Image (tube, rainbow, N blue to C red; front, side, top):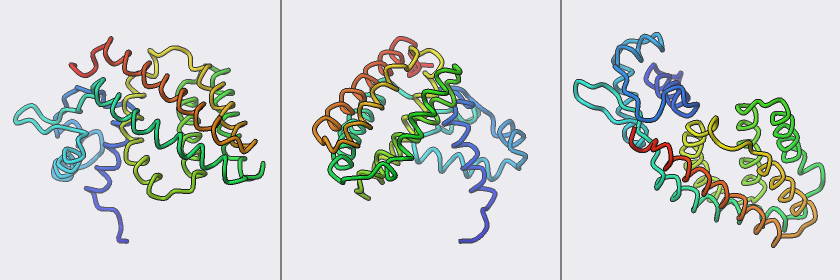
Amino acid sequence: MGAMTNVDRAVSALRQMIFTGELTPGSDHLETELAEKLGMSRTPIREAALMLQAQGLVEMRPRRGIRISPVSAQDMADIYDILTELESLAAKRAAQAGYSATDLETLAAAIADMDTALGADDLRAWADADDRFHRELVRLGRNARLSMIVSVMRDQVRRARATTLFIRPRPSQSNADHRAVFRAIADGDAATAHDTHHSHRRAARDMLVALLEKHQFHGL
């Protein structure tokens, strides 16, 4: 592995700005503006934008610059449908694995952090802890291919959530759902782990899709 090139750095920085919502879905940006923001010349920005266009994150438009691709309600529904099935399978496998309390410490810590963040009304910290919970859940499912597919899709979920984080209802139910999944895994109850996580993700999907439709982020 050589040192990161300017193009690599630009790709990494732009992806981060897209996923945190700093570059909002549907917004237009000139190459010069982004180059200035990142302290780079326009060439690596243009090359990075072409790579991000291939990933479906931006659209290059003549004379209009770089448009941050919107997340449509349909995209969200499709992504969540797949994530729901894969993560629920991971929850079931994790419950069958016979993990000890020590094995589940990272999962428990993520739930505790979600509770703390909610208590402090810090939605960004809550979203970060929620991400950690889902990543760890998938890791505990011990299926490398499943993990790979989920990681590709997780970026898209992060984008939609950045878009809706501050207009969604307070996520207290989400914390309760995570605790129920955790208990089922700790108890080795595979069916409950699967079904609880499945209904949790399905509820999240319905809520996010409704928000995206209502606020029409797909048509900005």
